[in-house]
Amino acid sequence: MRCDLTSTAAVITLNGQAPRSEESAGTTSLLARSGGALGEISPDLALNIGDFGLGADSAVVLDYRQENPPVIQLVWRKPEPNTWVRCADTFEQFADMLGVDQNVSPQ
Image 1 (cartoon, rainbow, N blue to C red):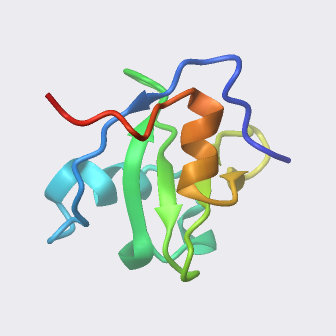
Image 2 (cartoon, rainbow, N blue to C red):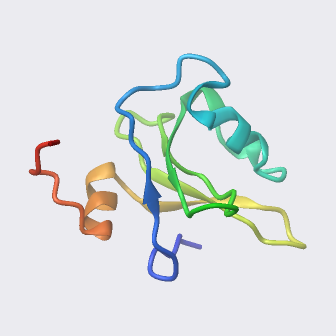
């Protein structure tokens, strides 16, 4: 199973830093609501970079268990257990999928 970014517009919330505590950036609270899939990842090595909008509770994270982290998304599969799926092999590939121009400087 792979994530599907075509059905829902992803809301990217980049802040440029890893969370300093469990509460910062909402990472742990969103990951904690992963509906049983938390054991599939290492929360201390997961950087929350976005979600699919208000009420989605479906985190999009960089998975730093690997040196070049893939982008993974939480997929809710009730009544089956929830799971994490790979969206992109790299952040660059993920940005390309979203049509983000990485050469644009912040205003």
